[in-house]
Amino acid sequence: MKKIFKGISYLLLIVVLLGSQVVIPDFSDEIEAKSLKDLKQELQELEAKYEANKQQQAQTQQQIAQAQADVKKTTQEKINLETDIADLNAQIEQLNKDIDKKNQEIRNIISYYQISATGEDAYLEYIFTATDFTDFIYRMAISEQLSDYNDSLIKEYQGLIVESENKKKELSKKVSQLETKTRELERKISSLNVDLSETIEGAVDMETELKTIRADLKRMEATYKEFGCDESEDYQACLAKHPDQLPPDTAFWRPVISGRVSSNYGMRTYYLNGVKRTEGHQGLDFAVPHGTNVYSVAAGRVVAIYNKLNCGGNQVYIAHTVNGKKYTSGYMHLASIKVKVGDVVTKDTVIGKSGGVPSIETWDHCSTGGHVHLQIATGHYRIDYLAWSGYTARTFNPRQVVNAPALGKSFKTRTQKF
Image (cartoon, rainbow, N blue to C red; front, top):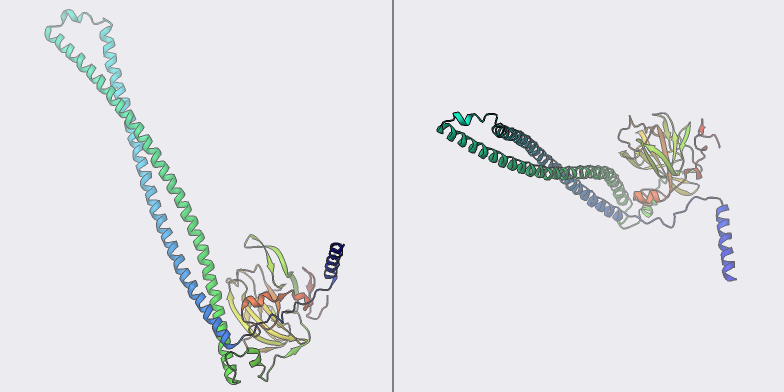
């Protein structure tokens, strides 16, 4: 009976959860304290990873060079073997010609025997002199010897042909093995090139992150020095001493005046460069013409900027305090950026121009057309937490705070409600 009530309780709980309204996730208890000391440690660790990345690049390049040298060597070995096979074919052809010649000589000798045995020229015995007869016997002996010799040569040539054919098979097998080895080396080179490309892309992203952290470190050091904070003191506590707080706001606006929702938050399937992909989408996409003004979704301060990332292109991140709660909005696939880190913005501030067109923003490999990608996370990125993974872990569906039409639907103003 207890098990039955327990099962019913679980079912009721599930029903309640499914029927309840979705709320914005609250990560306030998870936000880790970060200090100037922590940031210095993070910078040191990222620099170590960056150095390891460079070493990995060098190692992969060496492996590619070695594999390419092996392909060249294998190709030359294959050419040499094919030359040997061609020589054997020529040798076999010559041996067959020699056999045909010797066979013809044997046929001629046999024909001579046959003429002598018919008796048609029997009268010769009455007119042969002793010398002629001796010469005749001698010629017959020589003919027999020549026939036996030719027959022996034919057997020898046939043996050489068999030997050459066997050698051809052996060489052909080696050629096949070399072709297999070459294909394996080419696949290895292709795989290594992919690894190298990913490693280089990782280095580019790390270089951007290093640049951002170093800039953050410089500002934090100035703040800590200005307010007399200890390096191990939490940055938020130190920042709270600053009289200029983030401008408060009461609502979120759409990032563009007009446009169309082209992709929702969550799992999606689409084609990128002709390849079908299924993956999670951490934001909301607004399709707009290239060069459209992009606005901040609320008042706040620019906390991070990334330039020309392989996936996302130019990006801006803004920290907000809306109705007393902390958020950070992110804007990706920008053609240009009109603000800098530290700038205070409002909902009417143009932070950049839309991009995402592959033929124009050639560095951005994760876009199929002109649009703005908006994503929102709880907490203040680069203030409450520093790692990019911390930001992505806190993202949620922007529809929970930004009013937007359904997928595929358009809007003409920032205030039009849906």
